[in-house]
Image (cartoon, rainbow, N blue to C red; front, side, top):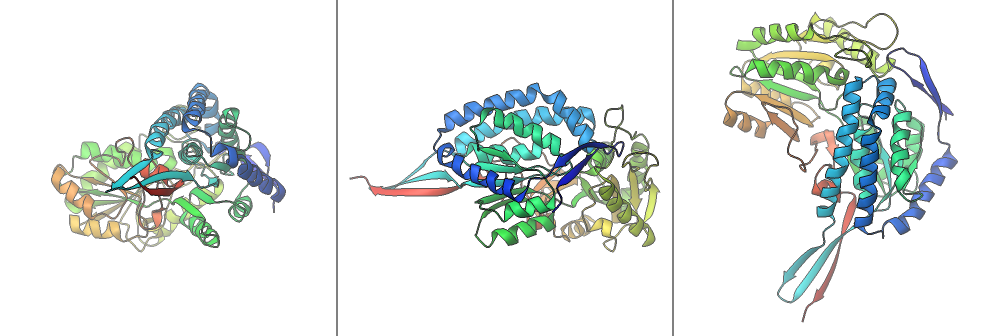
Length: 455
């Protein structure tokens, strides 16, 4: 087991800091502290928990610039977007407070003189393991529901963003009682020890492969799970779509955060009658993109690591060898850091790895289809089912197609973002459980019912 992880600046390739990995003893101690704190925290009134979380939200907003700089330095996100992530996350805490109040309400059921009261009780010690692409937003989406509902946590941020994870931990820990949140640092080996420890639940955002491993380990003790496992999101563009709206979304949705977003546009299916015009407009947009350090005036930063860049370049090379046409980009950028050109590929099919396996990189993949039916069939031919979008001027037709697309979140003529309080949910192998709603909040609890006769 390695003793240190190296925190690397992806814009320069230089070392930011050498981070000590949590030892097996420290992991066991963190879990033990969480279990001890649970005995008191689980009985703490929700109103008191909420008061503490309002302080956490305030401090996160107050420290958004400093944490934003950490995000940009550790994973390359544009600084403006990094600060925006902190602002949005502070608001998300307030939204989770509202949802928790609803989720924690006791349900009263009556049938003649029989009364049943249904309570929501916390599970215990929860392992929260989060990714690097949204290193503030993703931890909050699991930490806040878990802790607000009365659980305690051991928290392992990504090995690519350990200092951002530490900053988030310090804000939470500033107000929460000792042991309610416990920070553990490291990579796969630490994660493996955590999921094999004396925990009651795992809440994880990351890859399908790791999610399956977590499920396998947790099956031994029937530990509860919430897993958000990424996607291969399709974008369906019909011949009557408004290209003035569809093209900017296609480009931004594919290149945002250097394509390192679980709901990135990863597959575009466009009806052949408008395909040439669509490709031309996409190229015009992409050629405007400026690539560089997230602290500069650019549109796209680096990939998070050399490994991630290599994965994306390998997919591009494989597609090229098998007959795909690279219209723009497709190469790494010379010099320091892990930069890659924004890329546009056409003539792709299901025989290409880039159309079936998650890319997580700045690549726009365009495939022509003859009809909406063909687009739906291709969109559904995957183990993924996170997000999708449909583009047509006929709203009713768009909604009908959305019903047929096998994804948990679908936007018609827009992204997947919905009304506050609705779930963030993937189907198929993109998720097990979900977050972001009253029912999502309740997944960090179990129901307990008490019944009696009211005579």
